[in-house]
Length: 342
Image 1 (cartoon, rainbow, N blue to C red):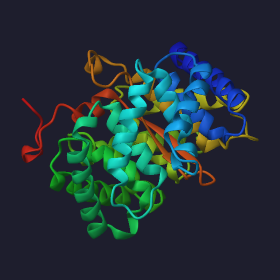
Image 2 (tube, rainbow, N blue to C red):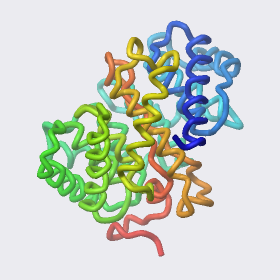
Image 3 (cartoon, rainbow, N blue to C red):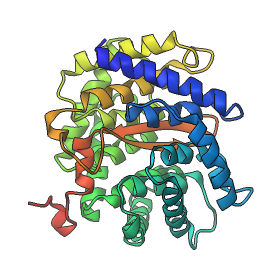
């Protein structure tokens, strides 16, 4: 295993242990998700800051707020990494209140969508982004009603942040879904669609992106990886810009998964194999995604993490990193004709 990937594995293990110890009542997978946020930045989790910021979050939110539940550790982690934690929380609450305005029910995905907007520094554009997200949601419900649900909110917000034309987004989703279905991989419909949502964030030929994701998937299967056909499949979208042969990349992911299995908090009694493989893939994306194409990207650091809640025991499902070369479409593109800025 690559030394840098090994170091990332060790840092994730260390950060998970520190967060779990400081927040004993939180679900373990939530601690792993928060740990990955720090690990992506290459630093150790500052749990003392997180605990102090929890008091501030509780002061600013009502007792039964979603923000004190599943996504709390995500918010506290982001505050701990911010140069101005109080301002981060103020901006977060402002964006969150804009997203939930007029909605009959709040859900955790709305909070995660708010984090996405702040990650891109687009809080001043949140009203425009929300309108685009609403349009995309309506179109998706019309085109793929069975495949669109509340847990798509974070994916949809990610798509709305891009400057891609809405018609292009929907065309990519339809094309990608049909292509992967034709590959007869045995992957279920919902994870195929979620993967396509991640792939549709970036520009480029959708079939080519799907084809690369499927090559990585098949390489993982050949090497005995229990990648599964469920929610973990969408994290393949974090790997498509890595310029390494699929078999070699799969080998690194499998080695990382096996290493994690022997670490406290990642063994079979606390985490199943396919979830470990997912985290190994996300770590690999952060390591191998740091290529020359991504150098100098001042908007997105090494990776962009999106957290979905309620996929595992109705709590936390996954954190997808999108490599900077994929996420560069977020800032560098225009809506006009769905083309990139020149």
